[in-house]
Length: 445
Image 1: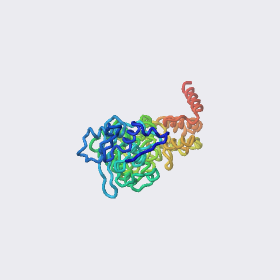
Image 2: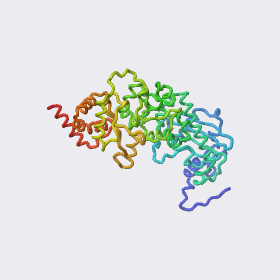
Image 3: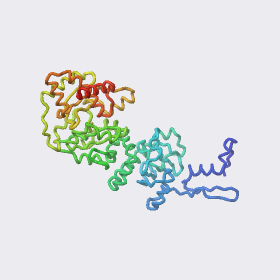
Image 4: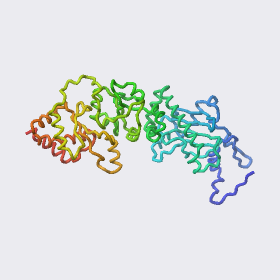
């Protein structure tokens, strides 16, 4: 018999509901039943069973569902249940669930996981970093046979057993997600819609897991409509002479699809990934590529689309000396605003667009970094011209006729228009509005 003496300030630990809560939280699954006695009356608090140590064949779907509701504090049905026992250098039991719906704390700034750690059925903590932050939506329990029961917070942070368990369980979760994508595409699409933005954090934070993650991640593209596409699907449908996986960054899908940068790619039937989650701007810069194909932004550097044939034959006249003269005039007029002026293959219907230089940051990444650092811009963009557009042709004719003043007056309007097409305001909105008003006045005079 063990007799406890309590300080006056700790008398709550003698209250029935407090004792019951502690037993359920820490010892609900120890391999002996626990009873509460009061006088001659006793009642059972736990029956000594633990669902995760039973073989899968001995657990019903209803039992899994009930336990998921308990451990996850959720009321949906799990999309995926992982129940297995690992044996070898480390022995542990795993019972994890992938929800269908987003938990309320999915985007909590702490990014903490909610997997409960047990040691030989005794609850230790739900704050151990067993699964990475990019799998924080997974719920359930992991029960180790090898860890000591007196684990401190410091021991949990740098423990080789915990690290080995984390590595094995993370790989298993990714493997099961990949299998789900192949066996039940509709259910996986629901999982991806709920947690895809979080899983993609792993592409940036866990470079060693990228090959596994690339089998799981899905994307909306310019040709996919409402469905999701894998990178393998995208590469399988490459056009002749296509050498890169193209992507476009933006704050939302509608904004990206309206971008003039996509016109030349659409004209050639090239599929472009629509990357609209904040983490996309970071992982895609550090990833070398997929299946030997590099990732290439549609808003950075030369488009290099000449090798891919347009869907419809381009019967427009090729740019001549007049356009070259316009380019030279605009370079001089805009030397303080842009890094370069050149003709473009990425434009089809719009007259102009702004792109980032060949090296450095993508246009969207530049904007994100500039916001974080409180700057207007990090570098000068490149102005690209659609040599086949009537506006550019008219300006080229002005340049060829020696009307440099007209071209110089139009130059800031071209940059302002390109910024508006990019979802930004002109550098000097008041001056831009005044120039447009003057232009309208002249055209109506």
